[in-house]
Amino acid sequence: QVQLVESGGGLVQAGGSLRLSCAASGRTFNPDAMAWFRQAPGKEREFVAATSRSGGNTYYADSVKGRFTISRDNAKTAVYLQMNSLKPEDTAVYSCAADYRGPYRPIANAGRYEYWGQGTQVTVSS
Image (cartoon, rainbow, N blue to C red; front, top):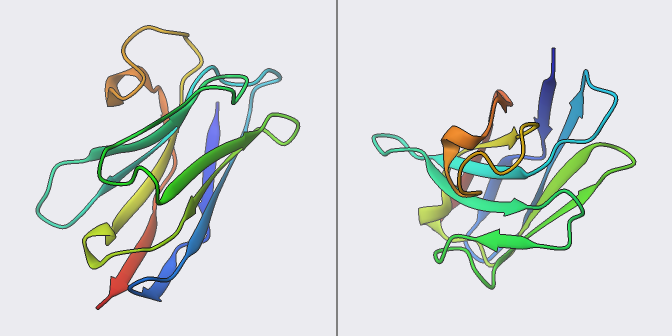
């Protein structure tokens, strides 16, 4: 069984930075796509960023483009999210997700991902 464990959330002032980490365990091979999603109170879960198996292709929601950077380390089966210039509207629970099936659905579609972490809270104060 695959487990994803996130870390790095916390409280930060607007304009600050945080780096989220997510480590996957339970399989001997790397996931295909890995992604970050977030869910704010009272809102639907939304796509934040994703990366292909090699890490060579990255995808971002328009709301975070230019501020967030996703990366992965296949040697550690880990994915990271560097978040800069944080805004209060970035406040949410951030979850990482892993896809082992390949391009079953679009990379920004939550239905593509079979495994999810428990989530880490990010709070940005104004």
